[in-house]
Amino acid sequence: MTLEEKKAILAIRKYLNRDFSNSYILKNFDLAVNQLIQNATKLDRIKTPGVKSISEGNQSISFETGAEAWTITPDVKALLPIPFIRMYWSWQFYLKMQI
Image (cartoon, rainbow, N blue to C red; front, side, top):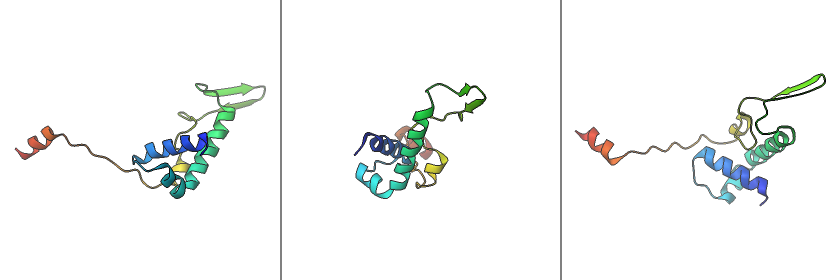
């Protein structure tokens, strides 16, 4: 497993909010893993962290707000299931609801 695959798996696991194994994510969400690696590789080549736009001569590039490598973009989200929502109830809150 490459370093890029590990980063993509971690990002997908955090997005889905599930504790899937690395092999499960690679097997079931391989298209999303590959798309995320492609997106991150392209962005890493052209974007310096913290820079919002680059100008050189007549050319100018502006980056989307929040565009960083290894973030789940809409094209990657389309290849993944809906994230799992965890709800945490405190015991004290439960007791108040019973009164």
